[in-house]
Amino acid sequence: MPSKKLRITYTCSAIGVKQDQKDTVRRLGLRRMGQTVEQPDTPVIRGMVHKVRHLVTVEEVGK
Image (cartoon, rainbow, N blue to C red):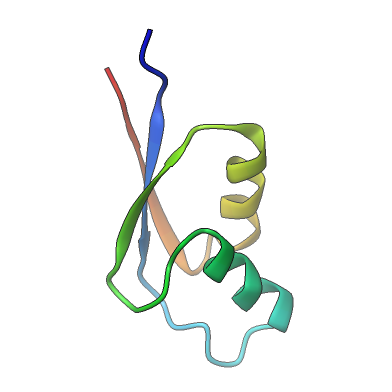
């Protein structure tokens, strides 16, 4: 049974935000503006996305 994934896109610059939020963006696998990564839909990833929700956009992907 395939699990759901989240497609996360880095849409807003992290200039001027707290260092822990910058670190969270990096831990999500995002390096540059406009980059998109797919991560598993787990509570840990959801929490990270919630912390930086003003910097990223998220779509649910899965079948």
